[in-house]
Amino acid sequence: MSGVATGGAGAQRVYSRLAGGRHGRGPGRRPRSGDGVGVKVLVLHAQYAEQGGEDAVVASEVALLTAGGHSVETILTSNRGALEAGRWQTLGLLWRAPFDRRIHDRVREICRRVRPDVAHVHNVWFSLSPSVHAACHAEGVATVQTLHNFRLLCVGGSLFRDGRPCETCVGRDLAPGVLHRCYRGSWVLSLLMARMIHRNRSRGTWATDVDAFVALTESSRRLFLRAGLDERLVVVKPNFVEDPGPVSPPGEGALYVGRLSPEKGLDTLLDAWHRVPDATLTVAGDGPCRAALESRAASLGPGRVRFVGRLDRPGCQQALRRSAVVVLPSLWHEGFPRVLVEAFSSGRAVVASRLGALAELVVDGSTGLLFEPGAADELAARAGELCRDRARAGRMGLAARAEYEGLYTPRANLAQLEAIYCHAVERFRRRSGLP
Image (cartoon, rainbow, N blue to C red; front, side, top):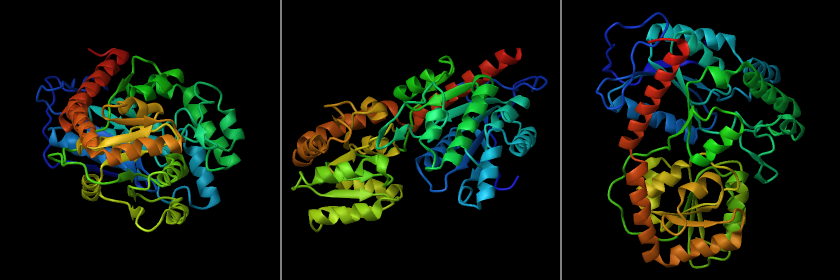
């Protein structure tokens, strides 16, 4: 299958089969959290054309599982160039996307060779396909699906339209997403996307071919339950980051880390910074709005706003140490911004929009401050307050660090993953009538 790479994440295979091995086509071993028995995991992910947070999360989880004594094999495809190919190639890709038979057959072959206990699926659009779930089940492999975004609910995948959150299609017909051309501004592409979502709903992919769903936050879980997912199958597991070490005192100014695109609220942030004359703003990231944002920022005066481009993790940690506060002015439903847990791990308070996951993750007045989405005056007041009062920013940063230590460490995340895999395998056994 063109574009598919498979490989082991670790050299040492530490897992062993329980007595009796496989029973027919069923999974051979029940994973048990903390029992010292490694699990064999097949990770499937279609990488994005522009590397983003989901790709980083997948890589981190693969490394975490391997370090935890589990054996990991990966099926990675790339979307780079897939939708920028010729018109007919793009249409063909989207036409096959609901159930790509070639992908299905190739994944079955890999399952027969690798013999995993559980398959953990991340992004399947577009160079993979939801057919991977059926392929794994056909070979007796339980499946777990992480819900990184809202592609199951929304033609555009973002629950964002005309500059604000949109839940029109959640649990309903997808026609509005087609009429509003929510996917890439194209009626034809939106129709094909709606067809893909509808076909898998009708086929029962999410009801019969997935044994556990992983939502990143409780607010995200509620949205998926509204759309009809079985509440018994949807569990919450947040993202994590490695511990960066001791917390340093707050630095100066505010830091934004993320994609420079309309839904991220950067226009609101620059409007707010006109009202915070005594603090600097560092913007880390890249995206389609960068040139326009740099032009706007120039009006604030030299040195007030610095654009530093995309940072690797060491660069991000250095930027966090230099800042007093992190700002997340999003206008849309975030999944689980990796920068938020990076900020918490580094002992930095977060000023964020009071919207969806952000309102759930940031405890207002404790680990940070919240403001109404799009409210530049309120954002200026909240961020300016913490930039000026670094003692208060430091206290909030310590509370954020405590939140990290309690919820977002690698150790906690590994235990959650192991429990989810155990749940998925047991459920698949019951569904299949296996002992």
